[in-house]
Length: 366
Image (cartoon, rainbow, N blue to C red):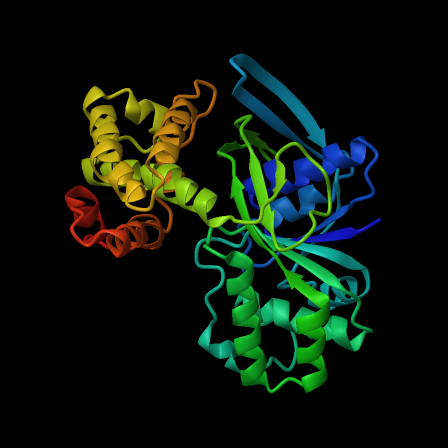
C-alpha cells in the first residue's frame, strides 16, 4: 500500500488527513498507512509521538451541522501505525523515507517554510534546523537509495504552497551544491502539488485526538489525489478557494483574535462566545460588508464572497465547538500579514481607489 509520511503532529492533521485515510482504508482503498514525524525540537509534543504508536488509534469527534442535520459522532482513527521524533530518531526516519514513502503530507505551522540561516550548509549529521532543509536531506537520501517517484501534498495555509515549498528546496539545493542528477530527478519524479485545506479543528482530546466541525475541504491541484473522499477535490484552479478561505474565514478569526488580545478578555474565551457580544458581531459583519466584500468584488468575486461569509458565520456559531481565541492568536503578527495585509494588497491591485480603513489599522499594528 502507498505509505504516507506525515510531517507534523497537529490536531488538524489528526482530524483531516489521518481521518480521511482511515475512512478510505475502511472503504477498501489501497492507501496508507501513515507514519507521523515530529519535526520540531523540544519535549512539548513528545507525548503525542508516544500516543501515535498505540495501535488502538485515537478519537476524532465530529460535531455541528450537515445539511441542517445535527452531527455528533466519534470515529476511532487507526490509519497511523508508526511515529518518530526527528530530534532523536533521524537515521530511522531517513531510512523509512528513502525506502517506504509514496506520499508526503505536512502541516508545520505558519512559519514552517522559513529557512534557518544555519541551513545554508548541508548538515554533516543529524537533522537540519528548518523543515525545508530536513525535507531536502530526506529527498537526497531517497535519490541515493534509487529515487522512486514521490508525491508531496503540503497542507500549510500558504498560497501555492506546493510551488513555494519546491522553490525553497531548489534554493537550498543551490546552496548545498547538489548534483545535477539530483536536480533532474527532483524535477521529473517528485511532484509538489498545490493544496488548500479547510476545516475548523477546535479542540484537542488528550492524549491524542481532536474535535472538529463536519465541514471539510482538501483541494489538490497539479496531481491526482492519492485517495478518494467526499471532502477531497481535484481542482484546476485553487486561488479563488484560497482567497475565500484566507480572506474571509481566516481573516475573520484573526480580526476576532485582535479584538480579544486588545480587550483583555478571558483566557478561555471562544469564537462563539466572543460573537455573543452584539457589538463584536455587528462589527465583524460590517467589516465583511464594508471592506471584505468590496475587495472581492473588485476581482469579480463579490457574490461568491457573500455566500462564503454566510457559511463562515454559521461555522463560527457552531454550538459544539469551543474554538479558543488563545489558540487562534498564536503567531498573530504572521497571520495578520498573510490574512489581512495580503488582502489589502490584493484588493488594491484590482482597484487602487478602494478604502479599507479598519483592516489597514489592524495591518499597521504588526
